[in-house]
Image (cartoon, rainbow, N blue to C red):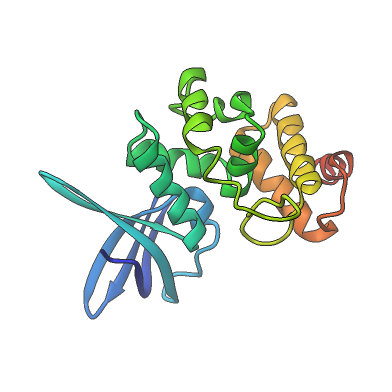
Length: 201
């Protein structure tokens, strides 16, 4: 298995990047949440990868960090009806932190807002992954990726703020991105109301 690829970033699209290594350009499919974190063209980039082999194709999927890749693999391997393309689409709409929080809270309504995910598929995701996305912790904390929200209360505030913005008409990906941006500025102690106000400001 090709676990990581590091090379010069020569091309970027919404769901694709090309890394050049020793004169060879590797096309890698990526979620929007990874696209946001890529450097400028011509700079070195490293992606955590998963290669999916089919009878007539070989596709490389890439992610900004190991946690995103592992969540992608969980979706594809553990949830019936979700293939690599749908999993990539899900990860493009919401960060892994928000997705994990929704699964841990059995929030099928939020999950169902992802493209290609209806109510039944959202329920399957919760059933199949709920015991896999909440690692053992004495404090009951969730693994949320970048450490900006690592307690149940902070995670709930984050999820509530995203849901509120979506109710106001934001797309899931825009709501997630806006709340994550303000969270990094005002800190994980912020209430849902403070996150919403800052995101709207």
